[in-house]
Image 1: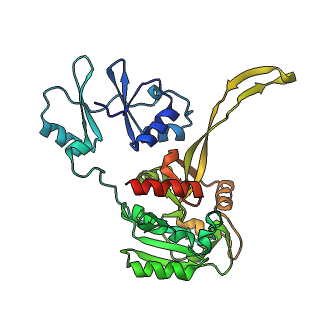
Image 2: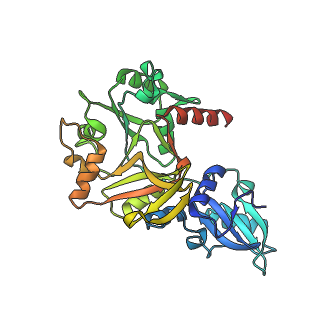
Image 3: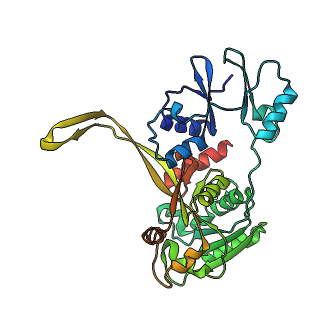
Amino acid sequence: MFRNRNITPDLLLIDALKKMDTLDRKLLIVIHENTFGGLLSAGDIQRAIINGKDLNSPVKEVMRTKIKTGKPGDSLDQIRSLMSEFRMEFYPIINEQNEVQEMYFWEDLFTDVDSPKEQFDLPVVIMAGGLGTRLRPLTNVIPKPLIPIGDKTMLEEIFDRFAQFGCHTFHLSVNYKAELIQYYLEEQHLPYSIDYFKEDQPLGTAGSLTLLKGKLDRTFFVNNCDIIIKEDYSEILKYHRANKNDITLVAAVKSYHIPYGTVVSGEQGQLIELREKPEMNFLINSGMYILEPHLLDQIPNDSIYHITHLIEDVKQKGGKVGVFPVSEKAWIDMGDWSEYLDHIKYARKD
């Protein structure tokens, strides 16, 4: 009935996040002793991380219990109407004993499996000037932005993901094999406005943005050409605006298993705690950002200047730098050989 989307309220948030990644779903059903407990979404976990909640906390501390449910006897038309109105991924039918009698899923009742995306029309800057050293020898011939993913290149994959949210204006920072990149994209006759700007010398991951001074007067996204974020970009933008951030950094949750028992000691070497093969969770800088246009004036001209320098400068001047978390599998680092090979295998299966 639940298609493996059910979890218990005592499950840890990190494990719920991993299950979402495995199922490629953003919503799970919380069941307690065969009764309906509530729902847990990726957004619930993201808000918990933003508010400082430990990922080793149980689901019951952040799950939603006040949600819309149906009752036995509801007609299919009623169910379809409610699911469409509130964009519900699934709709539980609950009896008087709070037991789940039936579960209706979006993909069973609607032909469009994916819900419509909230639209915004903002410029996107793609950093496409790197040498792609991690993908050599392939990048000795093909520039990294043009490396294929199925029937598309990396750049086209990024374009298309942003286009789902209404973004059609792209600014490409190019350098290595710039002419080949421009020639290829022009030959594809893509339905986007693409502007190219080229460094005369390497200026770092943010230094080249000085070439856009006077061109950008709105909030804009920055995306490395070798990373793909499988996330609702409108939710990242909402977070950025709601918190009045100068910069929002998208960070991926990354888990590492320590294959040994670890020791925590205190004064005079006295044992405090033994931890058997612990798992440690970190937030990794993914390579996607949202910036406000006034920051372009803070970037020095003709100097090597990385986006990490800009972030530190903004913080030192009292500006706001936000962090929006996404799950580990929502971040694909295509600049790494193992990640690239895994992704193209997945693309072939699709």
